[in-house]
Length: 308
Image 1: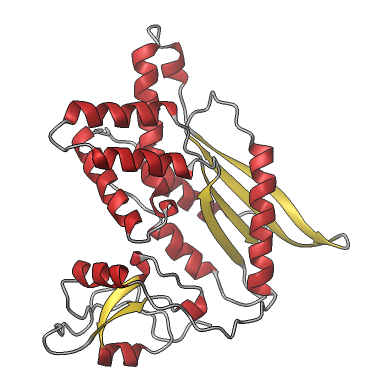
Image 2 (image 1 turned 45 degrees about the vertical axis):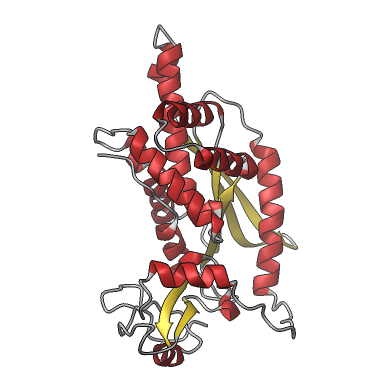
């Protein structure tokens, strides 16, 4: 099989199912980049974007040099009333590892990788966060580092033992010696021979995560300030992607007023990222109201009731 862009949509979908939006939720999760090298990744994408597509030797070298030397370490953090969740762990493995270490022959194609990286760069330009593409970046990091080891390790000693891994750190959430829940951070490690500052990363990630949970579950006061209008360039990108027609009824801009609608409403935590926007006509947008709902007759993600 050929390696293609894989983003975190499946992980996000699983997270939405786990979130209840109340203090009685069973679990809540998030993911991000533990290694803190987001700016390096963006700088690499900028440089790659500036290279002419007709100079494959140049951009192939840039891709190989970056992924063979850099370490991209994603993390997934989960807080739950249950101590362990094998289903969630298997899902994480599936998203980050199966396409690299599954029971199949993986074909790494430089042209395909280049095209996907350019797509990622263009998506980031209009507001999508780098975290959405961590599975794809992580997979390429694993594969190209292994290729680099193969080139440089003449005796194949390190190549034969090379292995990416998932490293969980578990802890209990207590109050007055009472266990309230469990927190697990899964670190996705692209090279098993490297020493990572996991304790330092875990401390920082856990502190930031608990701060977010406190705001989410503690009833953070709503601001009375008006929401900023959607950036006009982002609205245009949404319309352009959806061919200037309503995704639900098919109405075009010639027949109605089109809206760049938030799939998950901003009031429920939705963002202005392109993957959270969809083109709806005025009538369909009014019918949708303030609920999580994705247009399209064949879309399985439709939700018929307002999320709480």
